[in-house]
Image (cartoon, rainbow, N blue to C red; front, side, top):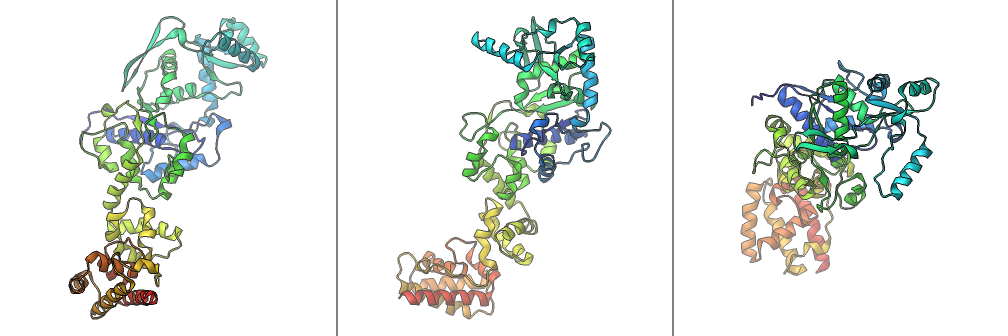
Length: 497
């Protein structure tokens, strides 16, 4: 499809302060889709100015998570680009320069208030039942006096001088105009005393210098949206198209989803974190499909999308700001759809690590054979070893009581097993085509039900009550091994007679 939008330069700017979660994954995806759809650039920027919260290995996890989803960036810390460096910790001098410019222009000011003083101010405000805010003491300082104090090395921060009267109007692509009452706006700190910029300043400067056309980010930035717009306006920069995505709600639909809810999700066998989803047996395409539809839709009926589909069909005009509850049942549904869309060869490749983790040596040739018959029964890839591990065992040992069909005695079940052995032993090889008809004829002769006889046979051959299609499974296991397993079942049943 031809897109008339100009090439977009977008950025995904995570903080390496922990595991990348589904909310971040969706933000990255929507930025990526807009860039690819418009022939623009997708930039990865690491926002690591909060040095106290950095987690070792988190940056590498970001790279791995995005690659697993199939997202590749055009510029970033690991590959460079025309706007490098792409780690904010390496851009400290740039931010300091622009921080000083804000002060010189009168849009910012130096603040020398100590932590003790600010704590007392907050206590007083709380006592008066006011919302905490800076009281503006240093805003009233003579600029020349403040500059001298900075020159002598006095500890300070830089605050933004917010307007005090009237209103500030900002425009969100999803929500339209948002109006802030200026009297409620705080003089936020932009530069800390250690010389590191806070997100508000660093992100604004980087977005301008990197030519970002669209800022697609989480709705947690809506409360400080006015500040970011005012920083742009103070410098006379063109604002990007702002787009704050919908909030993720807990699966119950009550309350915003957060990292703190991760423990409860894990107890239910789910996870909010990208790194866990692969081990839980989810496909990256299913993750992409699922998170794309939490806050966006193509129409009122389409639900199956691959990444190329989304590149073609995505539109920020169809994003929805309404909160989206995380629905893991729907996630399982999408994962099943994407498993069934895989070729036998591709599914076999994806199953290998799950069998290895279960301690099962699964040869690729057999995996390719079983992939088509287990594909329809799988919701997650990690189910495969339990469902199909019997294919790779030299022998199976069923629970003797499982071999007794419902409504039959041990004697009758043993007879069904012996007769089945006799029928299958006459075949030069076992295939679904040549084994099922004579076995159905046997069931009619015996006068019992298909469920009873085939159930005995299933437990005997696979060692389990639930398995892939019986005769297709027997064909893959092979005649000799099938007969040996049935004989073992006969022996077990005869001991119970």
